Image (tube, rainbow, N blue to C red; front, side):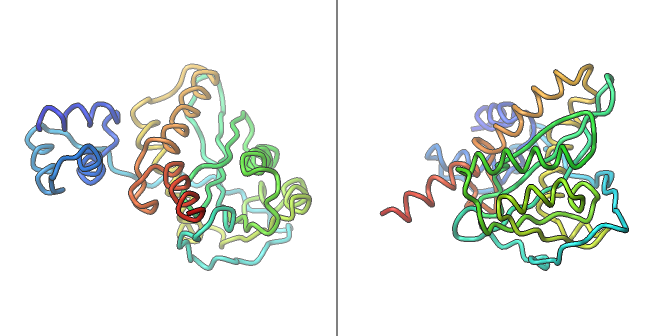
Length: 246
């Protein structure tokens, strides 16, 4: 079993700790506990990288209209998709110049349903990620809550107009309070310390774009999530659809 644990740790690029590797082993038919896997990993010096705090990129606009907080830190996964989304922006280290990622995560499964990357940390980038999410979810998302911080990217007229067209209801936490947007912050922390901390700085934006997109695909389709029944988000969504159709 030791060799298999080492193989799984390498397959997940050192991102999985003992709980997720235990899930993989159990899915393969092994009857094994988390403590046993943790002991094997310790004996092989296999340590998953822990999350750390990231730099906050919020740029509040004191004159902009703020939306009310419709979630109030209740990030309980809804039973179905498209009830509530959360969004945030983060920086991708790149030698070619500034490069940023905007994401939209569905609270139902923690799937990243929309993302966009670009050289400018602005409302256009946040709006592009929202529009991708709308397309991915079939175009009709009327009534979904979109929760963010009070950054100018989300309070400005461009993003507010995009929400209005799609009948998306905006929700905002307080400025400077990471807990008010904890799920979006958690996604970016996972990205930062499962991918970016290991990759260092990318030489070009093209390279950064390709690797971040690949990470998000893996996050959605392969990486087990504790909130999604310890399944990858896309797999969890498929299971929920099948159960509801039965």
